Amino acid sequence: MGGKYVEKSVSTRNLSLLSKARNHLKAIMLGAKLFIRPIRITYRYPIVKEIPQEGYRGFIVLDDQKCIGCSLCARICPASAMKMFQPQEKKLRPAINYERCVFCGYCVDICPENALKHARTHDVVFESGESMLYIGEKFTVDPDTQLLTGNVRMYRVKVDDKRGLIYEPIR
Amino acid sequence: MGQASEIGGGILSKRIDDRTMILFFGPQHPSSGHMRIIVKLDGDIIVESDPDLGYVHRTMEKLSESKEWIKNSVLFERLAILDAGNVTQAYIIALEKLLGIEVPPRALYLRTILSEINRISSHLYGMGIFAIMIGSSTGYMWFFGDREIMVQLAERITGSRLTHSYHIPGGVRRDVSPAFFEELERGLNYIERRLKDYEVMFVNNPIIRSRLENVGVLSKERAIELGVTGPNLRASGVSYDVRVEEPYGAYSFVDFEVPVYREGDALARTFQRFDEIRQSISILRQLMKSIPEGPVLNEKYLKLFTSKMKDVLNAERRVKLPSLFANLRPPPGRSYGRVEEGRGEIFFYIESTGDPRPYRVRVVTPSFRNSILFKYLPVGERLADLPAIYGSIDYFPPEADR
Ligand code: SF4
Ligand code: SF4
Image (cartoon, rainbow over all chains, first blue to last red; front, top):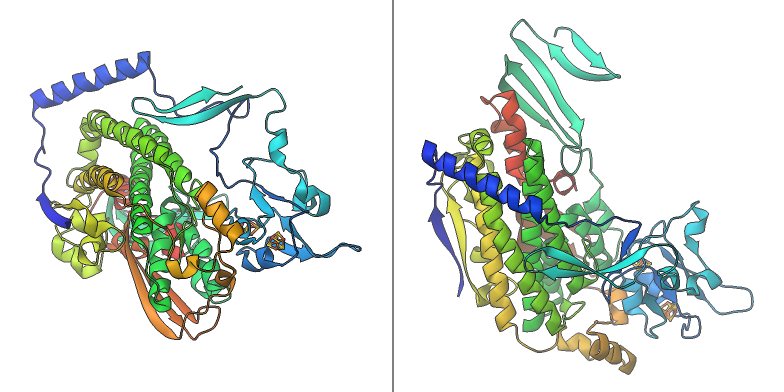
C-alpha cells in the first residue's frame, strides 16, 4: 500500500511520417464527431440559470425567531462581514455586509440555534455599496423566493459519463 | 543604455546596440495573476532572463498573525483557489499537530478525495493556460471546460466551487451522500475518456509537439540545485513526492504510482501532468470503494455537540462547529504541515505562543519555489519559446506572491 515511483519516458519522439498521417486522420475524425455531436459545458446565463445543489453555500438568511443574540457568528467571521447591532427595542442581532462576505459558511455552522441558513442564490446584482448591507428585516428574507421569478429557464446540472455535464430543465 | 521606446506610458523595450535589446515581457496577466519577465535578447535568442514578481503580494503571512487560528484557513486558501483543498489541508495538518488531535479514518478519506479532485482540476487548469499560451485555443476550451466537472464534484462535497474551506482541526465539515460516489464515478469515466481525446487533438498535434520537444530542458542536477518541486521536478527524473515520502490523509491506504519522466523538457512536463491525472483517477476509484463508515470529526469535539448540533449532523451530514473553534488556543510550540499540491509541495510552518492567534506562520508554496526557473530555463532559447516554457512550468503568481 502507498505510492511508488515509476520511471517513464516520452518514447514516441520524432514521430514518423506515417504516424503523423495517422494522428492527423484521427484528429480530423474526432473533430467531425464533435462537430455533429458537440460537448457543451456552458449554458446561456442569464436566460438560462443553474440551480445549485442542495447544500450549496449561497446567501445567508437569518431566522429572527431562533436567534438568541449570542454573537458567535460575528466572532468567527474571517472577513469581518458579520457584525452585531442592537435595534432600539430588541436584543442583539447580526447583520451581514456582502461587500466583505466570502461565503465560507462558518457563521452558519457555528450558530448554536440554527438561526442562520444558506440560500442557494449566489448571484444578486447591487446598485450601490450600501445596498450590500443586510440588516434587520432585510436579512431575514430568503432570496431563493426570487429564484424562480422572471423570464428564465432553470436547469439542474448532472455529471454524465459521455457528455461531462448535462443540464436538466426543472422549469 | 540606449534608447527606450514607450507605448502608452509603459516602457516596452530598451535598445542596447545593433544586436541586443532588453524587452519587458509584461507586467501582464498571462494566466492567473500578474507578473513580468525582463529578457535581454541577442536577435531573438534570450541571453538573460529576469523574473519580476510580487504584483499580487497580499501580506498573507503577516495578515495571519492578526486572525484567529481557524480564520486563517479561509485566508490561506486564497493563495491558490484552484487548489484550495490542498492548501488548507497543509495548514490544518500543522495546526492539528499543535493541538494534538487525531482525524478519524472517514475524514481522512474525504480529505484525500477532495485533494485528488483538486489535483485533476489544477492540472487541467494549468494545461488550459498552457494551451492558450502556445496558441491552441481548442486545448484551452477543452481543458477549462472539462475542469468544470471536477469543480462541480468539489462543490458537491464542500458546498463551494473553489474556496472549499473544507478542513477543520480534527476532521472535515461535511460528509458525502452515497449518491455522490455515483456522480464521481461518472465524472471520472468522462475524464478518462477525454484523456484519449486530448492525446489525439493536443499531445499528438505536430504543432504542439514541435513547440514543446526539447524546449526548456531542465536537467536532473539543475532541478535539484534550484530546489524545484512538484511535477516539474519529477519530469526531470527526480523521484520526490510528499504523498510517498511522508504520507498524509489516506494515501497509505491506496496503491498508486508516481510517474517520473527523465527528459525534463516541456513535452515531458506535459506527459507528466497527464499521467498524474490518470493516477488521480485510479486513487479516487480505490478511495471510493474502500471508504469506511464512521464519524468525520474527532470524538473529542463531537462530545461538545448539543442535541441541535447532532440533529443537523444526522439530517444533513453537516458538521456544526463547536463554539470552542472561535477561540482555539493551541499550546505553545512549533509545527509544520506539508502536502503535495497540484503544482508541488506546499509547506506551512506555524508557531504558537498559546494565544488565540498565531505568533508566526510561514508558507512556502510550490510556485514560489518554481519561480526561479524563469531566471534559468529561458536562457539560450528563442523568444517565441518563452510562452511555451512559462506554460509548461504551470506557474501560479498569486500562490508565489502570497
Ligand atoms: S459566510 Fe463567512 S464571511 Fe460570510 S458572514 Fe458568514 S462567516 Fe462571515
Ligand atoms: S450565532 Fe446564531 S444565535 Fe448567535 S447571534 Fe448569530 S445568528 Fe444569533
